[in-house]
Structure formats: structure tokens, C-alpha cells
Amino acid sequence: MDCRSQVGPMPLADTLRTAFGALAANKLRASLTMLGVLIGVASVIAMVSIGQGAARIVESTLEGLGTNVVFVTPGGRTPGFAQAAGGSATSLSIDDARALAQPGTIPDAVAGEPEQGGFVSAAVGGTTINVRAVGTTPAYSIVRDWPVTAGRFISESDLVAAASVAVLGADTAADLFGSIDAAIGRAVNVRVAQAAGGSIVVRLRVIGVMEARGNVGGFFNLDQLVVVPLSTSQRRMFGRDSVGAILVSAASADAMPQVRRDVETVLRRRHGIAEGEAPDFTVQTQQDLLAAASLTSDILTILLGASGGISLIVGGIGIMNIMLVSVTERTREIGLRKALGATRRDIRNQFLVEAVTLTTFGGLAGIALGLAAGLAISAATPIIAVVSPTAILIAVGISVAVGMIFGLYPASRAANLQPIAALRAE
Image 1 (cartoon, rainbow, N blue to C red):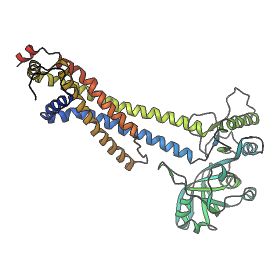
Image 2 (cartoon, rainbow, N blue to C red):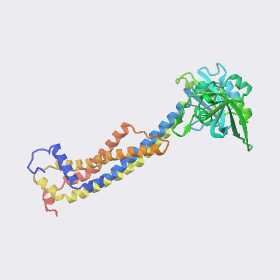
Image 3 (cartoon, rainbow, N blue to C red):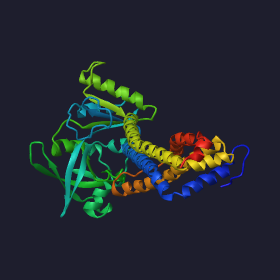
Image 4 (cartoon, rainbow, N blue to C red):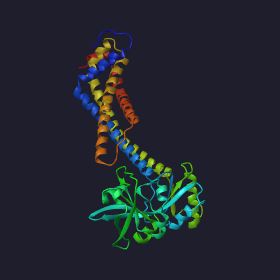
């Protein structure tokens, strides 16, 4: 330490050198002091990455449902995701779907299709797998923007005849027949549980295989699927006249709000529900679903981040306490420096630099630990942790701020010590 008398404030380089020297003299204490900030930052990074990963799953789920789709589900409005096609409410019928699909009924709609379904077991030889079955119309492929990769999709003649045909998802075809091409023209036995008890087996001929879509966030495999004509589903499989959902494809993203209003108007008229009364159906656009899901994800991210923020505050308090102890232990050093010409500003800056250095290094170590925790979570769960550069920059900024805020009081206390009193201290 340069003990010469000085004029003006100590240069920043000298302040840094003095602060680093003080920390290096107490390596164990410095490491333990950083621990609270390290854990806090690691918690924030890990928790926020989980929240952002969950948001990505929501986005990919909605993208997998089609393009510019308006969802109609039975039952009153429940914010969030549309009810599955196999839902228990029965307020939507095939006639509702036909009315919405009539040319000119919804001017800005491209196509509409009803869905009915549930989970079934599909068997070929000694291989049996559980898959999702969907009864629908030829418009399904258009609305979902989901073409076949082999064979053909169901046709109007299949629908009229309630034909015993099926279009398989890519994974279903591969699991049952070994390859996509081998599935075309082959037979598959589908076992369907009945509401009254027991089950029935329906033998279907494979006429096509859907293009592979993959997993949605690791939770839901779109390719484990069996698509059949809606009439086949109603008469020979599930025995229900109602449908679980009606999907309407709008001409563009800008047209979706108008399509939603038109769909609601048509269904209110068909169901005899006056304007202002609660409907027995729910109409939502993809944007509605995304907004609701994004709000939920944002709240989750904030709550998870706040839990890590509490650790940061606790770590900051720990740093303040340790710095106060350090000021007490170094009272004579402070008095000597003041006697040799150090100003209050020099003393305050030194202790502030020490506090900020501790929290910054703790924050950097916490970022590394948080990233590692995110990778571990991604390996152990379907959630892919997502960490944005912005989140890392914010974490570094918070670390510096914690050092400034919780180091200010100890630094000010050190700066206000009187030289004579400090030199007399034992």
C-alpha cells in the first residue's frame, strides 16, 4: 500500500489494488461471503430458465395445432387451453360443424372440421400400443396444415360410407409395421373402451400416414395418432353424436377476431342463446390461448425468480454483516490511512469496491451454477431450460447492485471513523 501523503482522491487503480489485496488476505472469509449471492443468482437463473422453457412448450403446442385456427369447444368459457376432443361436455354437434362449414356462413374462414376422439389401443400381430384416435372430416388435414407423407387422407366417400379406414401418425405406423411405407394397405385392430363398460375391437385398413410432427415439449407425441372418418368414430367406435371440438381455419391472422365473432353469432343462433347470456360453448383463437398461457408462464417465471431474489437479499445482508465485522477489525488500518492523507471518499470507495467485487464474482459463479442446473433439469425432464443473454446481463447487474446497496452502510461507517479514535483502537 502506498503510504505517501496524497492530494485529491486516490486513483481507481490504487483503490482496486488495495481492495483486492484486502480480499486476498482473507480468502476463506471472502469465499464464504460470496456463497449467499452465488446461491441466489444460481436460483434466479435456474428458475427463470425453467419458466422460459415452459413458455416455449406452450408456443410449440399451439403451433402444432395448425395455422390461424379458431377453436370451438363444448361447455362454458374456461380461460386457457381448449378442451380436448375427447371432452365430456356434449353441447356441440356434427350439425353445428356442418353449419359453420357451409360456404358463406363464415366469410373469412378457409375450412372447418369437427373432432371426436379419445385414447385407444392399436394392435398388429403381437405388437400393441396406446395411441390417440381422432374422428374427423377431410378438412382436418387443411385446418391443421398437416399433409400425409404416404398414401392418402380420408375422403368424402369414406365419410359418407363410414368406411373402416384409418390414417396413422408416423410413429404409430413405424411402431406397428416397422416403416411408413409398409403400413399402407395393411390392417390394424383398434380396441375402444365403452362408456357402459367393456370394450370393442374395430378392424381398420390403413390408407395413409401423416407427415411426422414430433413431440410437443417432450410431453405429447403428435405422431402417436389414428385418424378415422367422423362417421366411423360415431357409429362404430365411441358411440357419441356430439363432437369434442370444432376447428375453423381463418384466411389470415388478421381475420381471426372476425371469424371468432362470426362463429359465436352462428352458434348462439343455433343454440337459442341470446346476446349477453352465457353460452354453452367456448370460442377461442390461437392468440387467445397464447395470451392466457403466456400470462400464466410470466406469473410462474416471476414467482420462481422472486424465490431466488429472496436468497439474493439474504446474501446481501450477509455481505453487509461481514463487511461491518471487517470494518471493526481494520479500524487501526483505516485510522493509519486517514492519518497519511486518505480521504473519506478513498475509504468509502475501497470498502464499496470490496463489496461489489464479492457480489460480482459470486454472481458470475452463480450464473455458471444456474446454467449447469438448467442443463441438469433439461436432461432429467421434458422441459428444455432456456436462458436468454438478457437474463444473464440482468443477473450481473443485480449482483453489482447488491454489492453497492449492502456495501454502502459498512463503507460509510468506515469512512466516518475519526483518525485519532481509530488509531487508539485495539
